[in-house]
Image 1 (cartoon, rainbow over the protein chains, first blue to last red):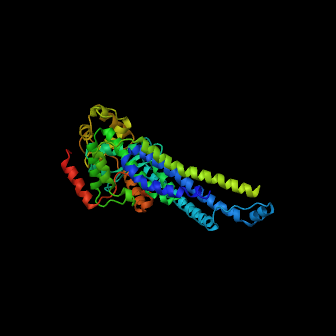
Image 2: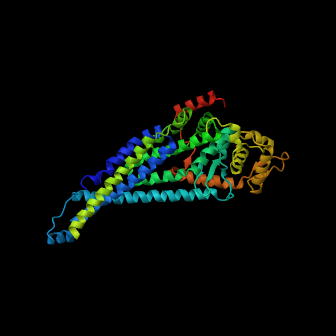
Image 3: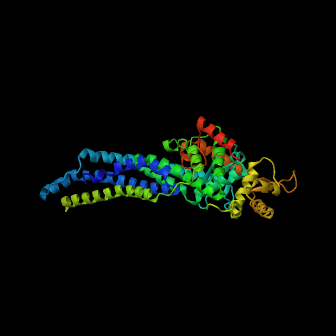
Length: 297
Length: 127
């Protein structure tokens, strides 16, 4: 317990540090999936470890101490009291943070549903009569693609096809689910924020690769991205994370190179790294139960 | 996927996908388009009859209108729902970074030096 219970913290840091490197080397579809899985498991393990640390305070509760003395048990002191209290505070803060992320997600979904109003249910493309160049996928069943008239008129015919194929890939591969999962993981464990940024970038790369496959031309796909980016004079900031900085330029550069290899061993290593905090937390749980059983039974 | 004929790829598009492409082509320009003009505005070869079928389906859904005062056989997109959507979109985007954060936007902001590199790419490319 002394040691295991803290393992999720350094392991989250390690995952955050290596995620950009994984994101730029491994094929985006594989990298996005393993990073999301690792982040979700790591976040859950971190919260559970904090809960275990907070639970050690039970050992300090007067009735437990009194009972233990009566039974002649020597009470184990696995964790200093101050750490138990700090864990309680951290848990409360993270709970609020996750709650905030969940309600932000709900607000977004509600806003997106409103955008589909008035359009026939069996139509994939929703056009917004706005000169501002915008395009995004609206997840749901069925998913929709929203594009503004401004974006459509900025692109050549082949580039419009790239745009539609890109957004279609977001919907077909449920990218919103991956991004939401990593957003919640990052809310539950702020050390994982860089992983969220990496996954957000990777789903764009993934959709770019699918679009290039669909139109059969990587150069046209790169040009579509360049034209779309240039068409917005004052683009709204998408997300202020380090890894998404220069995102369009990096996506174009990736399309000008050959598709990245899958590098399965590296992906397996990420999954293993994601599993380690869970093992540490599980072991710590076992220790805590044994300690409490020794005191209470 | 490498080595597949681009012509074959164009033909593989589903009816729903082609509907989106025809609608996108109509919205991309300010003037009404005839089926023949739409044919030229779609990437890849597409039979004239197919364009006709898709236009009829879009017309039945109320997404396109026949151009009444202009040339015969020309179509333009219906604007009502699209204008409401534009209003709702601006409202959502103006509300702050929260709603847009989760949207998968096609592209994000550029720096000046990136802008120059992209302009060079477009100027140097075949397009």
